[in-house]
Image (tube, protein in one colour):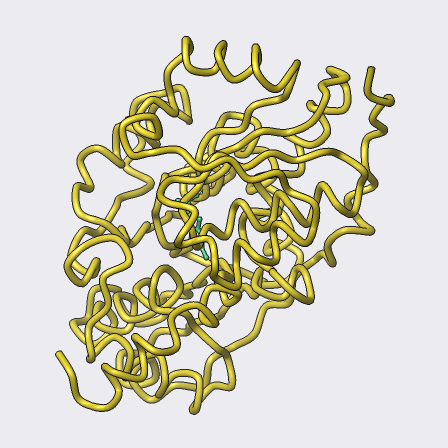
Amino acid sequence: MSKALTTPDFSTLIKTPSPVVHLDDKVARQAGVSIYVKRDDLLHPEFGGNKWRKLKYNLQACCQQQASGILTFGGAYSNHLLATAAAGAASGIPTIGIVRGEPASADNPTLRRASALGMQLQWVDRATYRQRHSATYWQDLRARYGEVYIVPEGGSNVRALAGVAELVVEMRAQLPRFDVICCPVGSGGTLAGIVGALAGAETAMGISVLRGADYLVREVERLLGVPDLRGRWQINDTYHCGGYARVTRDLVRFCDDFAAHHGIPLEPIYSGKMMYGIFDLISRRRWPPETVLVALHTGGLQGLAGMENRLNALRAGGE
Ligand SMILES: *Cc1c(COP(=O)(O)O)cnc(C)c1O
């Protein structure tokens, strides 16, 4: 029998409130809008990001249910697997990661670190991984790994929303006013958490990092538990640059320029696509003058180490 789990004190795991910084930017000035960045990438010194927000109440539930540990799913570069591994290591909760692909691709900085943090990694082929939302597969996993608390891929479930909502509450204390919160959308949990926390005239815009925004709209509605009747949010589908984890030279250039100019690093899978989209929309006058925008920096910078070669090839002039 494994030992009893105690609910971790989350304030020792991450540093909140994450800072909000104003961007002094010519494109925004010309359009008459203000833009701030909510720096959730700084929540944790090594792997900051939105996955901590989503984990908070899941870790709590895992401990309250006296599960034997957390089991979750991800790809070989998953920010979520790594945050789960780090949270587990810091709070004494055993972690199991079901990883899509071949052990051959295990030799990357993300999974090496997850493994060093004590996460037990289980490789599965694509067909098996496709069952990751199936109740029977979850039963099989529990039969194999014990009474684990299972968190879906990306950490997005209803409990994730309450953790994300806290960043909106923080922002109300940090800014006198904001009109639009922008965030990248991968599985939809972060956007759903933000939307659920909106008040007054605040709105949210998600920038999809993958093709198929229709599916994501339904997913956000499912997580929120109510159909979108309020017109408070939307998902923009034009900045995925070809699909999930696809990267173009323009995008990499944008991320490099942004980091050089503002001193804020971006990665091209999530935060880079979001910021690229926001600045393109600002230049197209998507928002009227006086609008106050906040871009949520969702972190993910740990993933840069595993893609340097690819990015350098693009920087050097490949397509
Ligand atoms: C997972 C992730 C996202 C996407 O969040 P969802 O809640 O899955 O939509 C955005 N940015 C980073 C850095 C992430 O790791």
